Amino acid sequence: RQEATHFLSWTWGYTVSTIRESLQSWLETQEGTRAEDVSLFMCFFVNNQYRILVEKTKIGADVLGATFETQLLRIGRVIAILDTWERPAYLTRIWTIFEQSCAIRM
Image (cartoon, rainbow, N blue to C red; front, side, top):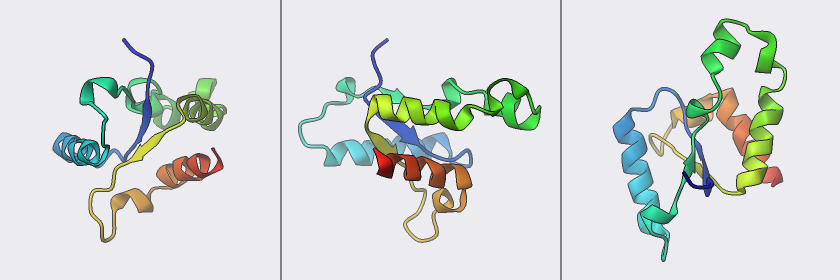
């Protein structure tokens, strides 16, 4: 396991193929960056948002934003995935807008 090099910002509506193809396209634009040198942080594997939001569990709900921001600042780089250029679902989700707001403040 390696330290995360990039924070991946995405939405639940994306298919695995959308994420994979987007990352392949991104990697092609990163001159001198090899896939094996990139380690992604995906909140899906770290924050159980279903437990926090749907089950309304108190533990973590109050600190979810702070936890996210801490991880983002620690990692220092964000890859935002858009499903389409015109009218991306990414820009309709409040959480991804929050992620971009945090990224801008880095």
